[in-house]
Length: 213
Image (cartoon, rainbow, N blue to C red; front, top):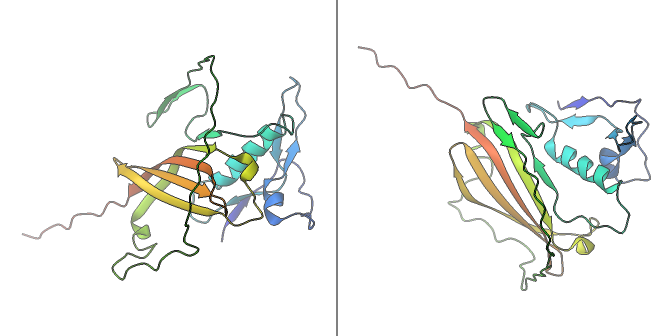
């Protein structure tokens, strides 16, 4: 059974007027002595069964929600990034080394609109020789996100109450890492977002059978 991580304050009842996902992402302001905007999860966080921590997608969504609460409602989100292994401006724990370098440049962003036509309404059936989705899942020992970037090309075209088409590919995997690229399209064929994620993937190490002499 999946575990839950408690909230900082007493948990209020779920608001039945909201969609379930809105309750999951709900935040509560936390008083701060230095004037900074601080928020915490209103409801307990979901801990998937067998995982080593809470679901990262929830943390990313709550972080984005907190950021949006600090800017005017007319501001749109364009490029959220989540360096999952960074715990400070510079860190090194023997497994990962990370540094943050700030740079400013006087430039302008030029938006590009992509459209795709003749989308198939349903995916084609898989060929008979295609592996089942979870056929190799039992071979994974550890899997964790290293970083995750989301590029929102058309925030105004995102409709969470409408169907969207998503496609994913893995252009490279090796050295216990894997790269995934995801594209999200609206129903009218507009590319609204591109996601790039790198993950740590370690497979189970099977012992080599010893030969009896």
